[in-house]
Amino acid sequence: MADEERPGAERFLPEARDLQSLRAAAADCRGCELYRDATQVVFSTGHARTALVLVGEQPGDREDVEGAPFVGPAGRILDQALRDAGIDRDEVYLTNAVKHFRFRRQGKRRIHEKPAVGNIVACHPWLEAELDAVQPEVVVCLGATAGRSVLGRTTRIQQERGRLQKSPEGRAVLVTTHPSALLRLKDDPGWDAAYDAFVSDLEAAAKAAKAARSANGAETGADR
Ligand code: SF4
Image 1 (tube, rainbow, N blue to C red):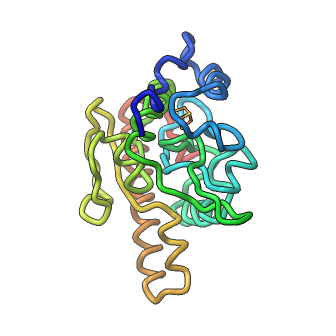
Image 2: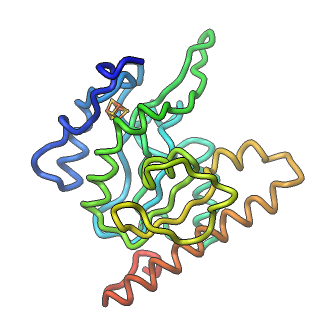
């Protein structure tokens, strides 16, 4: 893929960097080739000033059609895990490292394809602008693509998961698995342990966000 195919999102960012302006401007992004075949941009759900931001990989088939992140099968697992971790989904900001669906066609089906590093890099300005607008206490990376975008390097989920670390911009970051990885384990004997580890990582992130927000003299979304 030539670089001119992925000039990056920077030039499409609006002057105003509030979430509403970012969402509106992202609809016209041509920062990489993925806008061509996807139905629409899938930006985020949630509002500014939440203590916890969750970053996924990219919209899936269902998200691409509905225009909202985490509304498909992986989203249902995430919803359940958030409930089990005592986190109100309405009080977290949910987004993806890459805002358009990457897929290949197989007959009438659209098969998910992992975003290339070039897509992640091209789309990173949107994520960075979102994080600047929201100013969360903790960013949770759901999977290696989110880790690559937020930490700016290859992320090994099993070695790094569950502990707080700093992004190059100084943000508190916790890496965990993507709920779609759990989905693939659904009928596997390892499901219970994998799901419990995921919930435990979310609990750790919420606890750290709550402590940081309390230290800053404000109430966290996690305890509202
Ligand atoms: S994936 Fe990101 S960089 Fe590429 S066109 Fe979509 S919004 Fe722009």
